[in-house]
Image 1 (cartoon, rainbow, N blue to C red):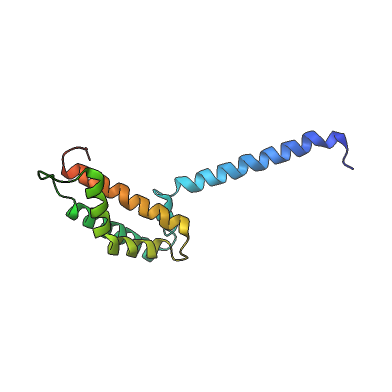
Image 2: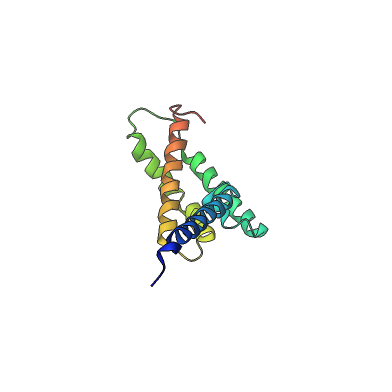
Length: 130
């Protein structure tokens, strides 16, 4: 049995550990501009490949997002079509960023792709600011 007198000391140790863990994780998060990109910055070549893959995907989305023409479907439908048209670039990006095929990462990357497509469509239509 533990002595009752050690309870404050154990609490202090646990609290100190929690604070240190939070501090370490916070400092690590500040080191990278993006959580997804941050995984590759310790390897300069991989970081370059990731940056180029993001640029290629974003260029495709921007190129395929067109201004509105009369009789077009709603923005969400157009954004989905733009997102699908850039799937080869998106798949290359996912393959580089997520080599172990974590489904959570893939899902987040696909959501980011859809969100970016929506943003580029809205920019092309003049409904959003850059």
